[in-house]
Length: 565
Ligand SMILES: Cc1cc2nc3c(=O)[nH]c(=O)nc-3n(C[C@H](O)[C@H](O)[C@H](O)COP(=O)(O)OP(=O)(O)OC[C@H]3O[C@@H](n4cnc5c(N)ncnc54)[C@H](O)[C@@H]3O)c2cc1C
Ligand code: SF4
Image (tube, rainbow, N blue to C red; front, top):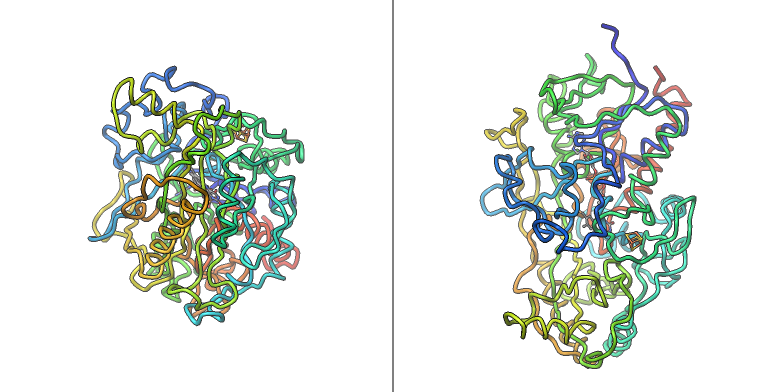
């Protein structure tokens, strides 16, 4: 049988993989994109405008739906009865936690990945992040500086459509923005209180279209974004990169194809990938001149660790021993929630945009002096509230029956709650490897997590709780409480670091172009290359760095470093 060979194989069709296949297809390369789950169909899978009382299981989904699955833990908000049309989330591929680790690995296996349901916060990283090691002496700098990456942030923002304002702050450089999302009543009250305690409260950078943009319609503020947008008014691969790549006719998209490993030739270079066809459970090989891994941070490391050969006995491109190392995450948790009595009895205004990251408190700690606080680096905070469709504060009010319902209504426009986003620091004890014994149902060794929160992020957590006490006082609010402990590691979905990039092949997996040091025709387009997290989210930077890496790769095709089929 003649074997079809592609110029490039891209593994994953999420924020990173979608960007790669768009760039490469538009440049005329023949690309095969491989996705582990089904094709997402917005009309079926984003059933966002249903009311909970219209749903058979009141939004929680069939309690027996995961029976018999290898990984039975249901995922939080994003996996609900609203998105049960297809089997969108990964429950067949089990993972394991080392003793003492409680990592929560949420995976969307449908085309487009997690950015079908993401929160859209999209701030730029700055030199305060890239050169953090120079500033506070901890860890490694990034191999790029702001001047080098800023044009790519602009390209990503202009393509995605990011709404915000110029803010002139060290920790979140300004970008190319659409008009900001209108503020809710609560935002003005919180901003006044925050001002009194010296904390910034500003419009977030949000990849949600406040005006029509690049052929995509403006948002109509239905407030259901984390169930997927049925009109495509926020950036997602489903509405943006995948149709762009398909329009070129240069794309072959394989679905329900779970990549197990990267295949190598007699010189140890990448020659394609092997995947399991979920339908037949057969293994299939696909060949290409260049392989791009964009299966999301952790799954990319999983595939590489499972790509063992005579040339790469501990996983492909792992001569540094850094593959799987430096696992970091954002510590998430609720440092304070309560309500604003001044809004009691006020009419509910239709500001049903509470599902959006409308405003945030960008990092304000250690900006001028990196050692001003007891911790190094810094965190940011989002505050939610407003007249959302569902009273998210229901579990903060005690009671039962009609009195409970009356109370829910009484408080309706007033509650607010905060979410801290605190970066962990790289640590030699936080990493992933493959379990020596446990395999998934396809016979693939499971990814195993080793992770604990460190002292630095726990100090930020304590700091944020005190800040919330001060804030509630300053804005005349009443505090109901705070989470007793942070969320489980993995909750944020902003993990970084397991294939970090750097100039030194002895201490990093890829060079600054995300091309592996050891295997020049193997590139990575996701957050696994980021050596450390920041106080900002990862997706817009994933898109920006993927654009830059693909541009570099295309240069290599032009120069003959990589040859077309
Ligand atoms: C509710 C929610 C809120 C969020 N809020 C924000 C936010 O406000 N800001 C922000 O920046 N980020 C946010 N995120 C995180 C954001 O969605 C991710 O950072 C981003 O989507 C990651 O993109 P990715 O392409 O690296 O991975 P993914 O989106 O996970 O895509 C990976 C793709 O690879 C495929 N794949 C995986 N394994 C294999 C395999 N073995 N073989 C073949 N294909 C494979 C999957 O099917 C998937 O399509 C949020 C996420 C969620 C769910
Ligand atoms: S609020 Fe806007 S972006 Fe979100 S789902 Fe509704 S229309 Fe789409």
